[in-house]
Every structure is written in structure tokens, then in C-alpha cells.
Length: 94
Length: 165
Image 1 (cartoon, each protein chain N blue to C red):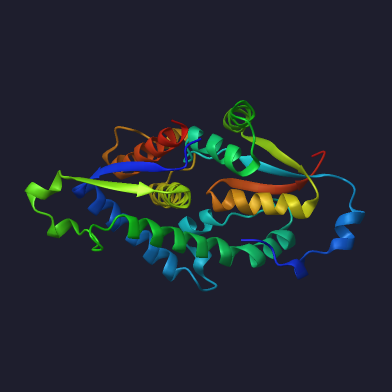
Image 2 (tube, chains in turn green, cyan):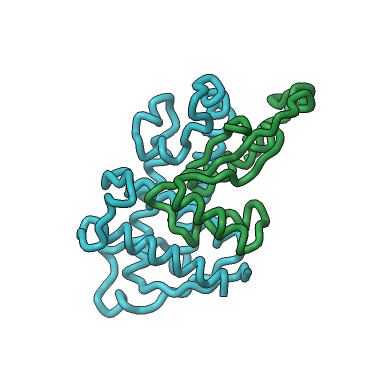
């Protein structure tokens, strides 16, 4: 489930100061209660925060669910894919 | 949140679910080659992680796709094992009428519940692709083709409620 260490360029991740984002996109299949459950379980968000994010995904089409180092955002996105959610990584500020 | 869940299904329901999850497991077993993503239902399970950067998306895929599809297989195997009665898979054709409505109680620990949630979700994603669901408006509750899809959603919702309870 984790990205092999040798594939992570530690020097590059330290140098990259701009934050990256993990974005979850709306899809017509996943239940609202399931998306909330995933945000609570994976990120440890409170029920309130998880529901806010879920509603943002549902109504605005997507939501930034985490920000930080690129490698970390990739791990989050892989985890979202594992749960069946549609998620992408992007540079912050977009 | 609770982590330990008891789920009650009728024997007939469990047999149908066994059939469905077995079909999903078979699809995953066939989805190992380079052409696995030619099937849009399989592609939906491992979406592009970068929208505007094909190289980064390809690299991410190289690192994660195998693990993600392996998880679908191990999850499905776990669900199938929990659906067995006395160690034997339930088969729809072998169930007589008297037995069909009897209850099968399945006890799930935290890992088992997670495997169920992810598997029901993945099977729904595959069905949705087969049914051509791409927007919220493509789903009609009254359309009989959505019967199985809706039923999986009902079971998924029930599991989530049990977890919250």
C-alpha cells in the first residue's frame, strides 16, 4: 500500500516549499455517508469537518481534503483510490 | 465509532452476494495485463492521480496500480470467506425454498468491516460503469436494471449506520 522508499526523492521533497493538494472529486456512485466515513477514518477528521468536506465535494464538485508535501499528498490520493473515491494530486494555488 | 459489527442477511441474499462478489473477484483476476485498463470499469478503480500531467499520472500508476488491484482481490476474498456457511460457499441454485429466508449472521471485526465497505463500493463502481452512470442524473431508482446496484447501496448504508451506532 505504500510507495517504496527508493522512489521518494527526499532531497527534492525538502526543497519543494510550495504546498501540494489532495483533491477529491464528486462522483455519482459513492454514498455521502461513505465519503464522510472515509474522511473520518483516513484523515481522522471530526464528524463535522468530514461532513463539511463531503458536502463541498457534493455541491461544488470537488474539495481540497489535505495540503502539504507532494509525496504525502500522493499517499493520501492512493488511500482515497483504495476506498474507491476519485482523487487527484495538484499544486497548491490552482 | 464501533468497530465490531453483526450483520444479518437472508441465506438467499448471501448467496446472491457471493455470486456477485465472485464475479468481481474473477474480473480482478483477469485484470493483470497491460490491457487491464481497456475495461473502463477496471480503470475507474485506479483513476489518474494527475489531471494535466500524463507523465506524473503514469509514474503514480506504475507505483500504485498493482497494490490497489491486489487490495481489491484480498478484500473480495475476505468478503467471500465471511459469506460462507459452515465453511461452504452458498450457491443460489442449491438453496431450497425453506432455507432461502433463514438468517445468516455475519460477525465482522474492524478489518472485516473495512473489507466489506471497500468491496461493496468497488462492486457498485463496476456496476455503475456497466450501467452507464456518469452523472447524478443517470441513476433512476425505478429502473429495474438498478435493482442490484440499489441493494448494494442499501447494504453499504446499513453497515455505515451500524458503525456509527
